[in-house]
Length: 91
Image 1 (tube, rainbow, N blue to C red):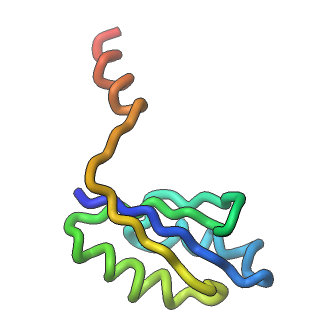
Image 2 (cartoon, rainbow, N blue to C red; image 1 turned 60 degrees about the vertical axis):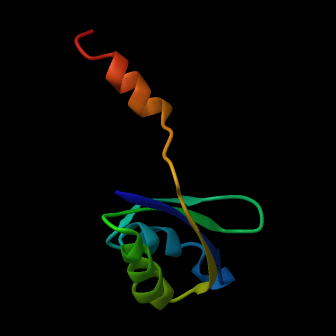
């Protein structure tokens, strides 16, 4: 499994509706509205690294209202949630 974080800068007119559109893209596991220089952060989960570019270039970039994106490929995944689930088995 390959994970990536995609930051999205949106056009002002798209802020109210773009979050749902981002979350509806195949490969986007979660989409968050965020503060700071970016408007949204998307967690992308796909089978292979080359699938990240398919999600970003062929799906996200086609959505109306996206001004620009910045993609960060994750090397390793650390999740407190996963650790808690592992240790709570049988409890």
